[in-house]
Image (cartoon, rainbow, N blue to C red; front, side, top):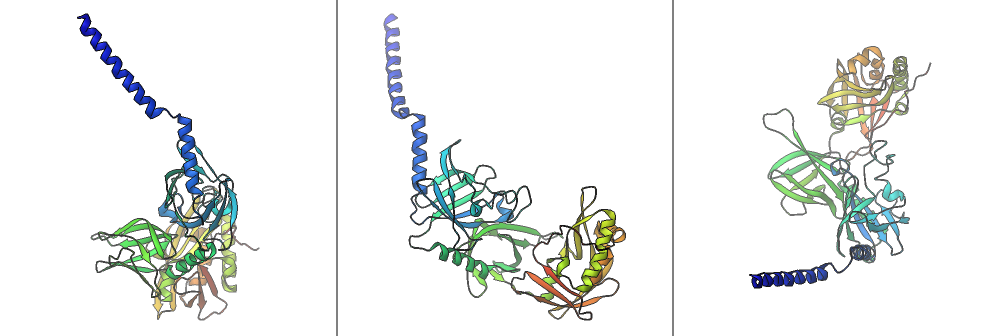
Amino acid sequence: MKKILYLVLAAAALVFTACDNEQEDIFGESSANRVDAAILSNQEVLCGAENGWVMRYFPGDPSKWGGYNMLIKFEKDGSLAVSNELAASDTIVYSSYSVKQSGGVMLSFDTYNILFHVFSDPSAPLLGQEGTGMEGDYDFSILQATADKIILKGRSQGTYAELTPLPAGQSWEDYLEGIKAVHKSMESLSYTFAVNGKEYRAKTSNRCLQVTIPVEGSAVDEVKTFPFVYTDKGISFYSPATVDGVSINGFNNSDNLIFSDVDDKGVELRVNILPLNRIFTEYMWFCSYDKMGKYGQKSWMYFGQGLEKIGDNLYYAFMGFYKNRFGFHFASHAADGIMYAGGLNFEYTLIGENKVKMKFARSGYESGVWYHENAKMDYALLPFGYQDAKTFTISVDNQKLPRELILTDMVDRSNVITLSYSVAYFPFMVAEK
């Protein structure tokens, strides 16, 4: 019995020794050394792109903002250079970065660079709301780092960024100019998304393509949102866009305003050039006091007095299509700190392609009726047609992608109203005594 026990103990000792030697082989290098090696390896990759990297950056929630292009060159001394498609193409801003251990290898853009941090700046210098901005990141986990591709994920908001080397000899300025040219060529107010012999209405919001899919038996359509980034060849989706069972990764640019999908699956994105009166009645056009003619400014002066009397400040107001109705829509900051919103409906008739006749329909929604009765909002409607219908001639700065729309009263030439496609906020309401 003793002999058997001795043999068992000896065998166990041999197994333990073998395991111990194996552990030493696997874990002989210290944890600190392995971290240092990972940091060094990632930094070598970052600095390895001779002409820098093209970064396609999707701040925060991609379905809100879509993606943007930056060019970045990392140096071994911790400095970096950044260009951005939204700035002048010859603009380069220098700052610093670091690669360190923090729950994995982290790349940090740790000194402020206006071209990079514009997407994470809470003051919202580009888009978004004050206090959050576009919810981008400047600290990233490095998920992949090779000479051909780097993939980053934001530590705070989950921003996705993909970096690929800019070809040697390619001018930074020329590359960004190429992206801007594609952007200008492909951007439009309205599209048709054609797939499998079917056609769907589509439009862009920021850098997202929104495709409207009718739902059988429902009054509410389905809207699919596909974030994308402009490239020097066309647009590339954040993830494959699937409509009617067909998935594609993007569209190629073309001079004929019909863009074919990059996967050659027969999908097309076609630019629609809409009649001017449909551009007015089917979209939102924001009002500004200083862009109204004499008639409009006099009317809105009384509207301002009505708001002042109840202690409100107008936040924004627009004419156009919203919540399945055409009319005057607004939001206002009340004295109690609450924001109220609503609208007043208009009847309209399209005349030809560049004229519209419209009049207040004596109905509204949400807070619209109350403001009409208590804040002199009837004066805000006078320039557009209140008791009597008004007929306007419509003009725009660019029919493919208008940024301003001008209504010219065909009877009263002092009633000329310039409206903006971009949101126009009222810091205060004009109210002269």
